[in-house]
Every structure is written in C-alpha cells, then in structure tokens.
Length: 218
Image (cartoon, rainbow, N blue to C red; front, side, top):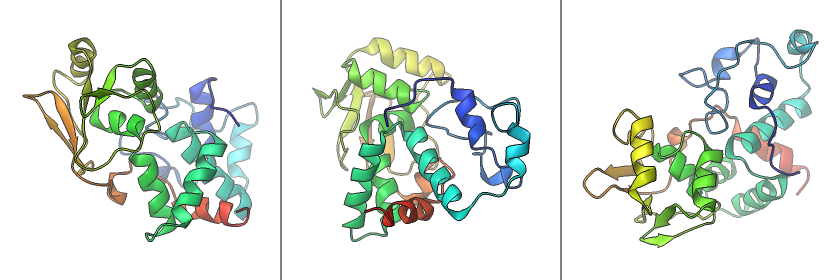
C-alpha cells in the first residue's frame, strides 16, 4: 500500500470516536498531529452514513486495524515499511510497542517535525527530499534516516530557517514533551539529546493493538 495523497480531512474523520472522542485527539484537537494540522468541522465519520458508522461497535480485529492505520497515516509510512519496523521491534530488548514507536519517533522526518521546523511530517519529508536538511553538517535526503543521540540537525540555508521561525512566532519552539530534543538559537541547530521517550509521542495511539495486529501475521 502506497502513501496516501488524497483529501486529509476525510482521513481524519475516519478516526473520530463518538464514545471516546476525548482520547482520540491531542490537546489542541488534532487527531493525527503528524499528518495534518486541520481539525474536522464535522465530528462524524466520512460519507453519507458517517454518523451511523460511529454508532456501530467495532470488532476486536477492526479496532486493531484502526490503530495500525492511525500509525501509518500519522507517520506517513507504507505498509511494507511498517512491517519492517515491527520486525525490528520484535527483536528488541525493549517492550515491542515502545520499540516500534521509538523507531518512528527517531526518523529524520519526525525529528524535523518535532523540532517545529515543519508543520507536518509530510512537509518535513519534502524538505528532506529536496536537500534542505543537514545532519552533522552533511546533507541528508533520506526521510527514514534513523537519528542517533548526539547528532545535530539544521537547515542548509537560512531561508527555510527564517520561514520556520515566522511560522512559530519568531523562534523555534519545541513541545515540552520532546525532552530528547534541544534547540540552540545561537548556532541555529538542533541537538538530539537521547532516544525518544513514550511521553514524547504526540499521537494518541494504543501501540499494543498494533503489535497484536501483526503478531498474528509475522
């Protein structure tokens, strides 16, 4: 399955839970913070029968599938990529669900997004693909690059840095939950202090259901 490039609000409405809406969104009402900054005006599912679909109780398989899709859309990864991340997580000494999320959080496109250098992960991926991002002073054009503690991240030119600052009210602002990231205003570089913690994940996700979904397949 390839990456989704269609209407985003339509996708966001897929993940609205009428009975559990408070746990569906982040603090600012975003359902998939990495996928889109938009908040659906209609709090019902997509399509003519969206409201009716919300009233139907999902099966256990349906709930696991929903969480898996939520992860895919938020981080903008393909099914093949997600399967590979799950395989690596299964071999990890950490809890499988946490190891899976940590890999996704340490991707370069996610790091750029969490630094506030791009409004969404797809936007961050575009910056990387076009060669505007450098890691440790070298240009990196691979969005899936796994960042490591101690590495520095920044723009190749000041033009895009200035745009990022303007979009953030004049300076680079990192979410308080991103304790593994630090930004230096003097050098205009971000430093990765360590591996991402579970509390740094902005997406409301039950990663255990994702692991259960693949444990029956792998």
